[in-house]
Image (tube, rainbow, N blue to C red; front, side, top):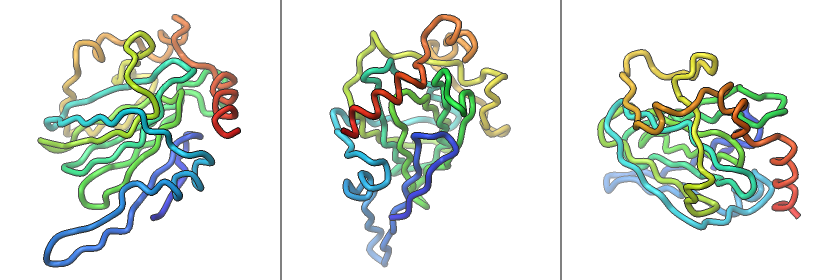
Length: 199
């Protein structure tokens, strides 16, 4: 499995080695030892989620309060999505910056999103399926969002895809608005939390 750090500190891309023949394909899309060596800690899995989306469905930008927030290991076993990680940690050297990876059933990459980062994706094909391994369970009282079409973020949504948002995501504040409301995690709090997990 190949790994690559993304531009946003705390996010990585994982590309498995796939073995194909006339029967189909076999691959290991998550390996605990590779993950721990890359990230510096094991992934505790408290919940596994799955979504199926029509072309154009845009989910995010989602994040959870720190601590404990919610880290995600994101994989697309069917279809294709453009997956985006946003640094929303106030005080971070890369605050407001993002990186994007296409997740699909061809290259079969996965993306890890650390606690305190924002996450979103847009479906590029009907029936795109996304599976998430989550470090904590869903806690609606501590879950927040940022408007994924915030013009200041300039996220790289494809021009040929008409975005379809939930009412909740469409009504979410901009990054600036979320900061003014005190919703965003701080970089200092995130670093302190990361240190407790790494011992």
